[in-house]
Length: 276
Figure 1 (cartoon, rainbow, N blue to C red):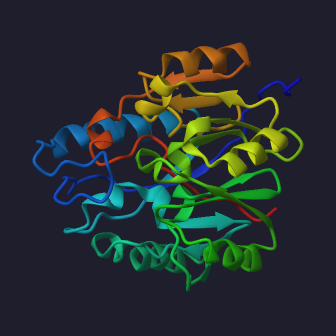
Figure 2 (cartoon, one colour; figure 1 turned 120 degrees about the horizontal axis):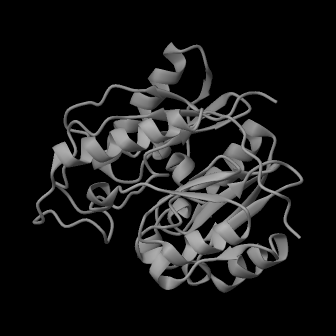
Figure 3 (cartoon, one colour; figure 1 turned 45 degrees about the horizontal axis):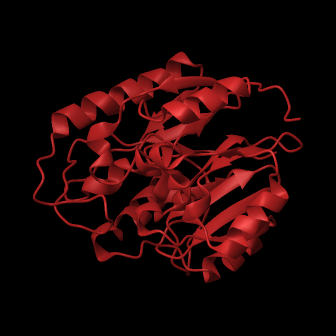
């Protein structure tokens, strides 16, 4: 049986969506002809930030940059393992300036940074579970980056192939519910993965929560867990019920305006993992 959920305090980096809009299309969620409301996006983002702080977590912010509307999706900006920063190197030109901007923030704040040579989109595709890094590929992040981050961090890296373009980053198809070694728990949407990757997830996490199509379609798996409280899309009702049955506390937060760009709560939240 899975362990009883326990909260651990977290450290997050976020970016206010001051300049948020959908002016280009690089994933199936984006429609540049659809109206986006930056003011509403800021309001929803502020509620998300306030929720983290009310739960006892530390939240720092990076200044948004004009012309980078997707910078709000901070999870893509880097991967931090044991206090070491592995920079993002974005696939699409529209987002490529974000990688250096996030890396500079970390360098300015005293972190050791490693500039990626291989294409990767940060914690959007690289998620820590216990002593292992689960690493997505198929749409945004090159498989070669998995070897690169393994060398940088010394961690085992497990490659997972994504096959549905709606779930183009790993954090849209899989949520880490408990990242503590010995207590690992995840939730995921099986059809988002190749047969081989799905079999690997089944082998590693036989007690995983399996999301429904409806849960996945509202980006319910783009959730943020502190080991007890799970900030989740309000529409993911079946997922919330499963989480409650496991002893987790679902915390619904509406990020529907940011969903127009293809992101939810997790996309907006980069976890800064300290040295062990």
